[in-house]
Length: 255
Image 1: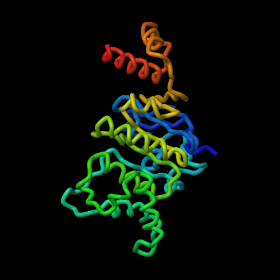
Image 2: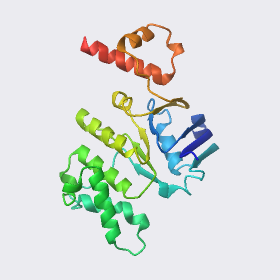
Image 3: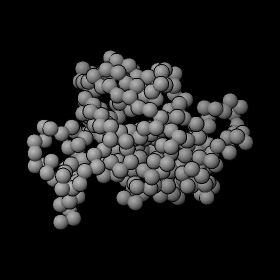
Image 4: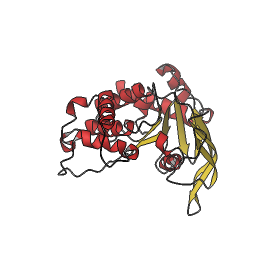
C-alpha cells in the first residue's frame, strides 16, 4: 500500500485552475521535495494532502484512506509558526502539544513526557527542554516544532519551507535531521532551497499547475550539465532544467 497516492487531482480557486490532472505516489521510504514557482500550486497540494481542502476532481489516499480518516498519521510543520516572544512557554511544553490528540484525561501522563523527551533527543534539543522558546534561534525553534510533530507518532512528516530565514549551515542541519528521520517515516518538504534539496530527496516533484515527478536527482558532472544547457531546453524535464541551471550558476560563481 502506498503512503500517499494521488490520482488525476485537479483544484481551482474561483475557476482559476491551480492543479491540473496531478498524479503521483510515495512510499514510507521516500523523501519527496516539492518545488516550483510561487503560485504554482505547492501549498494547495499540501493542504489537499492534509485534508484541509477537498479535491474537486480526482482522489487522494493516505495508506488507502481519505486524508481526514488518516489525519493521525500525518504531522505538519508550517512555514511560519507565530509565537508571542513574551509568552513564557518552554521547549518541553511546546513539544507536549503534540500529545494533545492522544490525551483524553486532560493532563499529560508519564508516557506523554517520555515521548516528548524522546522526540527532543531525536532532534538534538533534549538539553534545552526547559529553555524558553523565545530565547532560541530560528534553527533551534524549527527543531522544536519538528519534535512536536514527532510526538504525534505520525508516519508521514510534511514541512512547508522548513529552512526559511535560516542560514546555510542551519539549512543543512535541518535537512540532515530530516534525512535521519526518513529512516522510519516518510518526508514531504516544500522548499525553494534547490541546492540543499537535491542532496537529500530521492523524489522531486516540480509543480506549476501540472506536476512532473523526477524519481532521482541527476548526478552528472558540471561539464555535462554545461553541455546540456547549451542544447535545447525542450529536451529537459523541469527538474533537470532547474538542476542544470543551479549547477551552472554555482560553476559561474566559482569562476
